Length: 130
Image (cartoon, one colour):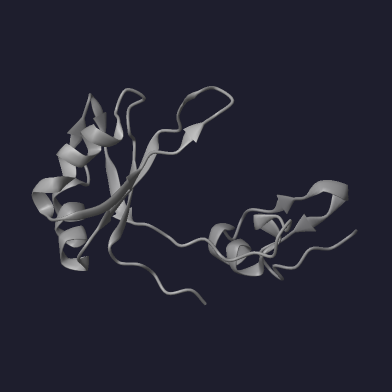
């Protein structure tokens, strides 16, 4: 299992007009930054509404979460937390077929339907062809 990077913050609720420079200015008071990323939807050519801020030190990331979670930036409330690492997958393998991802992202009441009629139920977390 991958270990969590405690210096990488997920920042949700980011307004479309916020740039990496603006996020940098908002988070630099808490410590030295390694990187900032705002993923884009290339089909729509706009930001996807979230970003990642990586600090040099875990303590700086914790201070940023404490101070910035629930704060407002460009009229939107930010949600800040430690970023979850994505499981490493074999080339060409879909994320939702990874058991670890399913266990962590499927609630007890939910089922997930995959292509070809496969259904994943929380009880067994394994795809079935019924």
